[in-house]
Image (cartoon, rainbow, N blue to C red; front, side, top):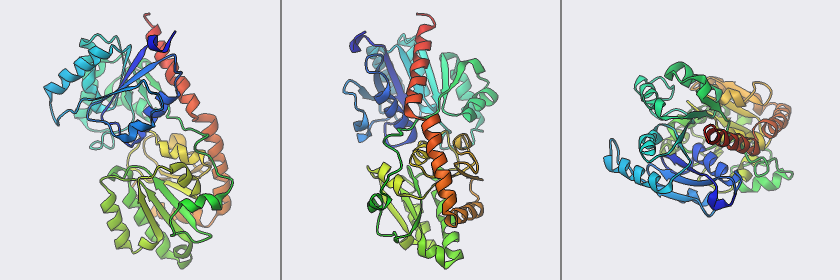
Length: 384
């Protein structure tokens, strides 16, 4: 089969921008066999220069630019786009992309896969009955579901009423060659800001700065740590990498806590693997998660992970083996765990090594790509 004859997968997302879902999609497109599948991306909103990470030159990106609320013109553009592309599979992801299912059916797409990657920003616990009903309403339009965690799989079964045989779980994968421990740690640490003392203990988090990511909880917990003992103020440091609507609030929280000289907020960075490998401990203080790509990246870099016990985090972070789990929004508990790592470098080394091993064995990008390729083949092959 030539590339031009390969079945086309049309991936529908809200916006092609920095984010875990989008990162996973780009990695998938880059990693699937070149001659087995072709790809297009339909953005309900629009695309950004994040699209430059796609290494294939044959991926068409379409911007629908839907207006807020019901937008009949956007539905018409979806129909016309899907009709023109003629995809073999329409793969929608998360709530906003459900809009493409009916236009896809009318356009003649036989196979529709829907991915659940995490909660809507306005429904962090997945308890909103209206959104559950919305998912249920679209269920007859979907051939198969794929979730990134067992937690989301159970949600579809128990809260939405989706038959378990229609749901597949494929965890996000991480590029374990790009994200890996660096042999010369001091050289690697030159990418960090001058906040670092020579023997600094660096806690860090990386990702889009939104309220759901819990950055302010981390700032407050770190402030409790460094205010508890002067030795922590001398050596503990906090790195928060990323941009987003919560940046000003996070900066203000840092200023109020009087720890600005101990923190580095560089904004968006293109050298994330180098920064990640320069940390001592990775922290994910989210209020809700599907499956966190950055947790996987941290594990691949040989870092122990402190994460909140939400969503799929506990499926990645084995307690006392590769890291520690804490209740979400519990700043006292988070501060206590930060102190445990600040005083036990042996624990950091042991858990970091175990984290790298687990990432390579269980969550490599190759494993994720193989699982999606199998899902696409099985879906197409059911009736062909």
